[in-house]
Amino acid sequence: MTYARRAWIVLWKDLLVERRSKEQLNALLFFCLLLLFLFQFALGPDRERLAAALPGLLWLGFILAGLLGLGRSFLAERENDCWEGLRLSPGDKSAIYLGKLAGNCVLMAVVEIIMVVLFGVFYGVDLWTPAAPLALVLALGTVGLAAVGTLFAAMTTHVRARELLFPVLLLPVQVPVLLATVSATQALLLGQPLADVAHWLKLLAGADLVYVTIGLLTFEFVLEA
Amino acid sequence: MTRILGWLAALGLIAGLAAGFGYAPREAIQGNVQRIMYLHVPSVLTAYLAFGLVLIGSIAYLATRRAGWDRLAGAAGEIGVLFTGLTIVSGSIWGKPTWGTWWTWDARLTSTAVLFLVYVGYLLLRSLIEDPDARGRYAAVVGILGALNIPIVHFSVKWWRALHQPSTILGPEPSPIDPAIGLALFVNWIAFTLLFAYFLSRRMEIARLEEQT
Image (cartoon, rainbow over all chains, first blue to last red; front, side, top):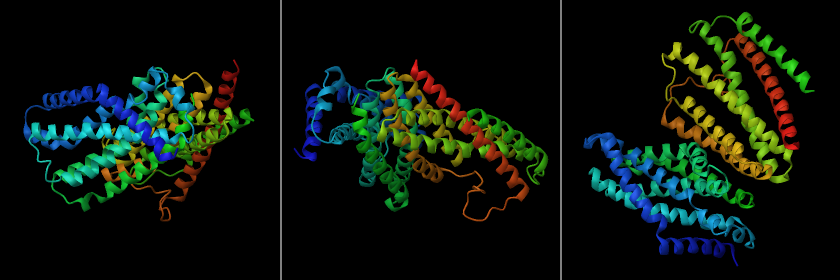
């Protein structure tokens, strides 16, 4: 079985489980809606203030949703003793990481798209005009978040105080991704062209490359336990 | 050996104090406040040295699985957090009279704070796992990611904000620093490095004894 095929099987398995149970997606979408309300209550009804804070709130929302969603990446494997199965699977273990990462990216992408639409509707911000460059920023940021998130989720699955440790490990590492995505989103919403945020996009692409490479190289050590 | 290191570090620190308070001249613009630099700069250099050793220890542990490398990484991580904390606190004390504020979201301050948080997470992870091999492997992954993340954090924060004076010692141009101040700084840096080596050696010894019981 080729490397790509093995990664695809893991991805397909996760998507199928999610499609049949809708365990994570439903809860995450509801969580996003709640966040939207909470942000509104915390900042008051002033539209301009909300619009100014929008890029930060948007990414705060993605990261909070990511903490919940990504942190659960390997729980199904642990609860049903499939961890041994993953470990015993033949070939390079990094294929499992790649499949899991792809699955998490799909999950995050669905949540993000719905959240962006909700933000546009509730806060009255035009997100349609800069949609294409915004999608690029979202994609790059999501890969960075999910690459580290997937790796750390696998690691913390067997650690006590998992719910606490996962954000404490993930959040500081994600500071560059947060800074880059929020700054780029802000510039794009202000109508600046994509060229103005090129340095942020390069930083994000570089960060993604570093994170995914480390994930691929170290995943087999994480899976061992 | 450890004992000798300890005495050398103590001697170095005394020499550093003498150099910092006696030998080095009073700085023209900032006055005596500047002398905190003799604590601040060696601390941050020591912290970087420590995190570099965490990276080396982590990679070596994953490659060889020798417990000694993990002890090196763990000990260096703890001391690195200590010196990063010292850097932030001393910088804050310097910043109050100089910039008029304890804390500001300047690029260097922010990236140092992020560094601090990353390695506090690293220590927390270590403290929550009992199995020595699993602890070594997981901590190594975080240690490698944390170290390789430093340049990314550096650039992201730099583009986000900048107020700190540019680095005078490690910058590309020849340093405009007074030779006496430079010498005092150098003495303190050597002293801090000796202190670091002493701490590291003691901490690794303690970790080794802990694993035996």
